[in-house]
Image (cartoon, rainbow, N blue to C red; front, side, top):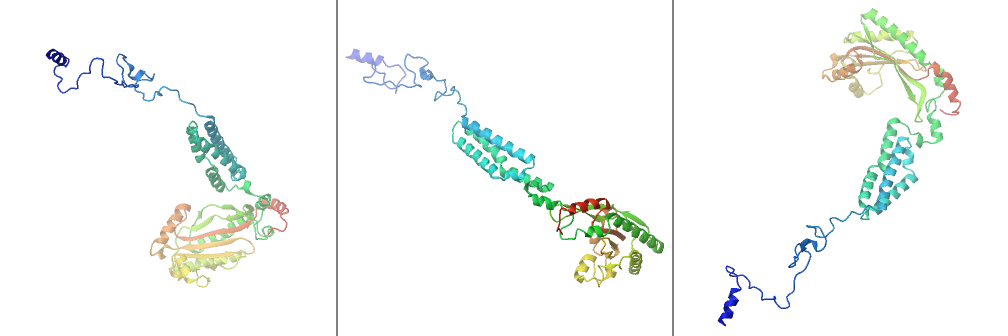
Length: 380
């Protein structure tokens, strides 16, 4: 018995106090061995990761599995999105802005969106569908149509959105609401220009002779087509002559009156009525407005005198202004004059004259104007 006890003690390894007892020979009865891909079996080296045929470090065994390609619906969505964007851009490029908002284009967009949404719900087509959705969000009817509208507004070309009747009206050579024959009865552009040159020459000569003032030309002649009231341009011209200004200021009240009287005499010689004063007390303008426009109700304290005459029913209108910075206590009017002088090069002070004429017809366009009017019976 002692011998058996000694044998039993010999089975324990020295220095293992507190360790569990060594299993009996042959192991415990009915014991189960743990199994699995990560448990190494006795006597089977390297079975930890290779039992399932997977690569070491892979939990599912799918790291080396080939990726499945995108499905056909994903490719269809991508191609449809790109083609739809290309169609919109081509439509914009050719200027067919009205087509963008047609039923066909809107229906096509809905179809493309439906295909993209369908592809988003498929695992293998989701990536391509996302790309197609991005393209569609950038290039859609609303975005491209808005760009087209801005482009059309800037260029003024709305031809694709107009009826034939509207296009016909747009080409009207006269001006809506006026007698088209009036342009044929009144002074032509060339006659207005000649009249302006003549009256200016006479005024400059008289003013220089009587007061010693010298002159400088201000600006250039300007010709602008008049709008016809139907969305287009007429054949009639708004004429602005070159301007003339004295190089010396005119600040004395009595001298101002005398200068305007001299101009009045010259325009009378050219068959025009007496000068009319916008800044005077008999102008019919409210005194508060006179003070706002000209610096004061009193002409003696005004920084601007504005006189006018015309040769109605002909279109020539002559304006003569005197600017006087000595009547500018705040300096605000000087700032305005300095800005104007920077644009045109005109003197800050002194007398300035210009001729304007609206809706005049060039003699060179007279025959064409009459011919075009034949296509617009009853227009006025």
